[in-house]
Length: 80
Image (cartoon, rainbow, N blue to C red; front, side, top):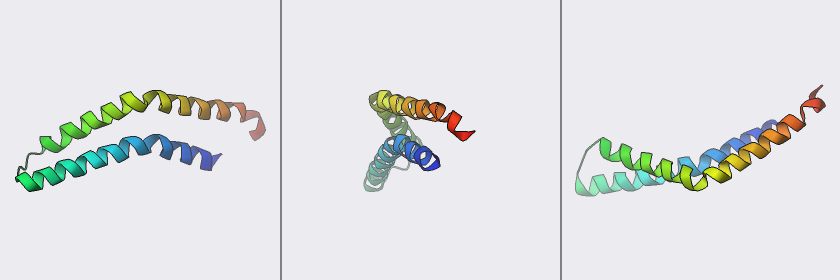
């Protein structure tokens, strides 16, 4: 059950982390090319990207988490 828990956590976190990292890389490249060194310029696009990923994939994430919780609760009698 521990490996399933870790796999579920990775599966749920990977889209948000991956997409915000990609947006951060693109913004960083644009900052280097244009020589604009504004700290809020990296924060705001990453925040918008994370919110967009959560809006698009939020239903799938919630379903995946609910299925995991259902299996976990159903297996409680097996632990005793």
